[in-house]
Image (tube, rainbow, N blue to C red; front, side):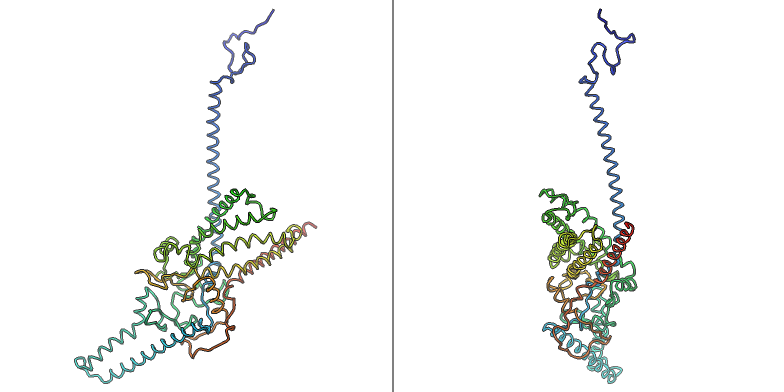
Length: 504
């Protein structure tokens, strides 16, 4: 007899239990049930993914904010040293007032001396004539011919001799020109006897700094119109530049690597068999991003170098500096002009040199940080020094060209201020990178001549052409960088010795 299983007395079987009539039937195999189950599971999965993405976004935002804050504080620590180095790089410290014996300089110095001599003679003649007319005039001489001439002359003298430099002050838009300066009657430009002359130095300008970076920092902090807050001029602009460069450069490098099917950019170059393509994408990404962000470097340099005196200050901040440059110098001045070639050179050589150091140590010197830590650190110190000797002159030239405002050498817009610098800069512009290097070596390479407040005396002394040549003007701030490199080398050597002692 066959045995059948009947439904339990309680009614229909549970949908989730096996069907006694169809033991191989599963309720989940129903299309309708499967649809509802899949719909519910998909909705739950989307909610979980959305919640996870929201948590990831919040974590990424917090991480980005933390990194931005840490980066800002790190740049704030380094900002005073960078400001001091920038001032040393752009300041003009000429030999014998910047005249070095070539035809142009001799003619220029002759003209200035003649203008100064004529000014002194004319003032002495007018004073003598004024004294003579004062002694021979009568009480009612105003209505006589002689008296009329006397009063006209006295009026001219009081406005021309005593107020001549005040008029230049008003015409030069808040210029604090000293009385010992000489005014060119043709161009109205003010000439100082020497950059080392104490009496003719404007109040907003520091004395020449011939020490190191620390000396420049202390002088800037102690200056009456600057103060210690001036050590952080341009820090916000530098932070914006660093954050934008942080995101743009790796993104562009990764895109180029994916485009040309190269290895990931996170793999160190020393682990690659063929490093040429990866070096090319790395340098290209630095060059493109550095060129696009170069206006921020231009703005930062000008903000650091300009005076903090509110009456003399030209730019009030980053945005105002960019808008003023566009209005007065044109939109192309942010990227082009004399700054174009130095920018391309700087953003090409800097990443190339810094990233090639591990390759040279590994493949040329055959040294390993694990096997020979001391020799590796020593080789790294030597190559970093060579990289510094190549990079620092380019950086110096670039900053000098960045502070050249074209409107200072031509017609300025009505009401615009001149660019007043906290240190003495070269009045005549550089015509390019090569000319800047040549002028620095020729005009600032020799010994600096001290001139008293009374000005220079005597004629022009001819001297050998080689007596003023030198490259020290291209390497201002070199001592600070060398000290930093040697300190890092010493710390690394001590650490390696301690590790070797622990192994024993």
